[in-house]
Length: 246
Image 1 (cartoon, helix red, strand yellow):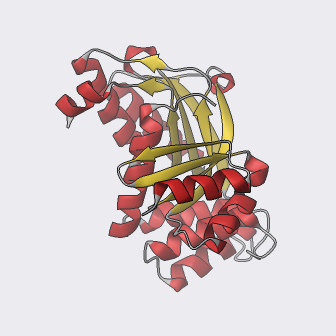
Image 2: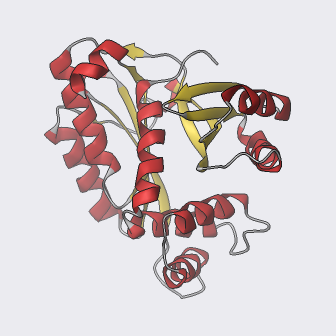
Image 3: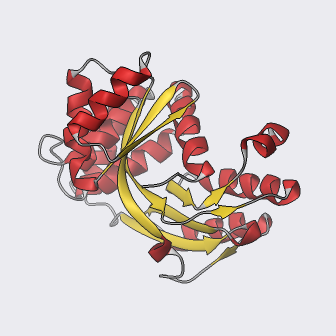
């Protein structure tokens, strides 16, 4: 892997801050419900175990967690909960993938389309941009010793690592995510986040300040929708331009 999109770093940092604030219990409940479709036992359902870890770190009440598991696994007899991937384009022609979890796609699709359109983007058709990304495992750890954490991650089988504002972002093969996570935990590294993520194969450099500002607003607007559980893009913005935007 070579380099990672600017949105990947921004989103991972934002996700850690969101978890600390305990925002949007609905979003975490949706993550749990989708994961629970493959089984209600976290010991045998790795995706559910990851979702539960994120929810508990964010202070989601146990009652909400239990309801989400029952909803996703069909134990409560509710309407089928489904996971949908939307694909589109943002300002500057960047590619965007949106993961959503919903019990009503007639509600979710218009919300996602509106978030794209309001900020100069457009929702595309299935398959329009997904081929530009590859799925990886991603682990975020607030490493106090970056060198040690990097070596532990690589020895455990990580493909790549990246430093971002005091955190180490570790990239793995999807099938190696659980193994690397457990190895880092065993090495006494705190894990803020562990998930499957779509990472871009190539990047689109955004150099215009107005375009970059509009793009970030669009990504935030999409990411803040309750039904949206993941957002990915292939844009890159230079550190110098990011300072202006900040």
